[in-house]
Image (cartoon, rainbow, N blue to C red):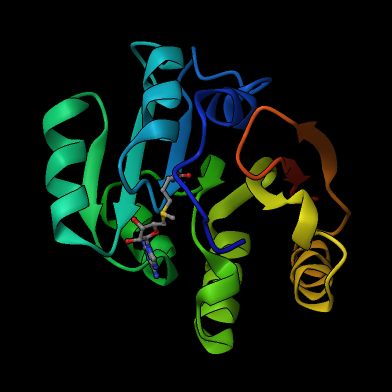
Length: 176
Ligand SMILES: C[S@@+](CC[C@H](N)C(=O)[O-])C[C@H]1O[C@@H](n2cnc3c(N)ncnc32)[C@H](O)[C@@H]1O
């Protein structure tokens, strides 16, 4: 959950696979960093879709804004997501995709972000993130999944991506 290396293009493609971003949909990326997943989102975006990318690092936000004009890049904490969506008349979101390094964030920050995600998704909306296969059975990774499943009302769908360093599980929750 804390990133070891930037996500591979294969992992990025798996993060957006199955999401229909062609219609009038609202998609949010949390922690775009250098933009590997942002690029996969951008390739799928239809003309009526709205996309927001939120990162806490100004230099990443500036680079995302330059590379992806169709995506609004915002310098803020993911914990502020409901307010950021309301301010843009984008609330609620259809899909939230996260590359945030939850394993290395303070627990109170993770809790605030998970609350923000659950508060921002429409019923039936999805939240997608990944966990490395080697860290998947650890108590921290399990308690993260449990905390999300409680908020979303059901457990995640899981797909494995071997072509990533390290290999990772992509996890998608659907908000009940
Ligand atoms: C490891 S990078 C992920 C990059 C890319 N999504 C990937 O998968 O390769 C994590 C990103 O999360 C951002 N970040 C960390 N804490 C954040 C927070 N509270 N709100 C928004 N972004 C945050 C960091 O600045 C960094 O760009």
